[in-house]
Amino acid sequence: MTVLVTGAAGFIGSHVSHALLDRGDEVVGLDNVNDYYDVTLKEARLRRLELRDGFSILRKDIADKDAVVGLAKTMPEITGIVHLAAQAGVRHSLTDPHAYTSANVEGQLNILELARHLPDLGHCVYASSSSVYGGNTKIPFSVDDRVEKPVSLYAATKKAGELMAYCYSHLYDIPTTGLRFFTVYGPWGRPDMSAYIFTKAIFEGKPIQIFNNGDMSRDFTYIDDIVAGILATLDHRPTGTPPQTVYNLGNHRSEPLMKFIEILEEAIGKKAIKEFAPMQPGDVKETYADIEASQRDLGFEPTTSIEEGLPKFVDWFRNHHG
Image: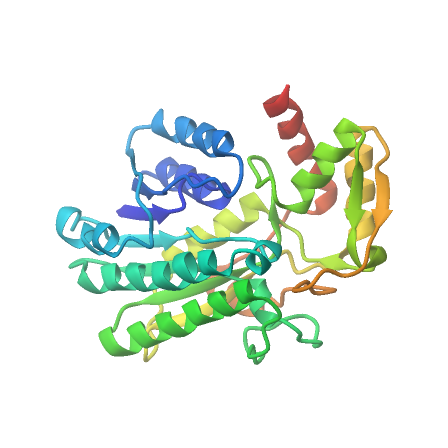
């Protein structure tokens, strides 16, 4: 199988690329390596991938229609797509909204157009987000819940991506599956995510901001579990009418933020300097994944608790940053 992985220089995309290569697939990475966060981290991820047989990288922007859709002619051998490239981050969407419509709406459309024109495509898997659940108060979040009240533009663009994929599956019989990820963390993680932000600040003796005065919970999901779910999804082509579906990929546990911080403190061997702050616009108090459908259809069984996963992240952080 030749798989196009968009966002291959990113956190999840680089891990997925390694896992596909491990099982013998060819991987074509696509990433514009933008400066939303530290480019040197993205380049370091790519260097590890470029050492491996079967990997190639295209430094292109998913919002570039001609570059993306043109791959149907220049690389017709692509038989699978794992579309992970996006403009991420809820809070950043408050300050740079156009980046989200460009990457998450125009980019999604371009990937779907590519999928439509690839002659032997078997499945297009794309990243959605737990943020689509917005202001839902029913816990845990189920894929059967209504998701029409987003509380951030980021969430709205991710829901738009799901609707667009449904449309293309209906019109062109393209098998598509959306994956709603729940707070992914682990080695090589993003610097704008809580595990990285808190760990860096604690090591440096700087304060960490704890929003909603610490009264928050998240379904923290370790990267290895997410990658296993993505590969299982790629291999599980939907057969309905239209051939599309959406799954939650989460740890099926909602962990208090303060517990998360305590585990980090223990792994680092140092107490955090805590600054409590109000809830931020666009944020939600709790996330919790109902994974019944992904367990049933994909055999998805996350195994990594934060007690096990966070020390692994801290070990990577120590080694990577010296």
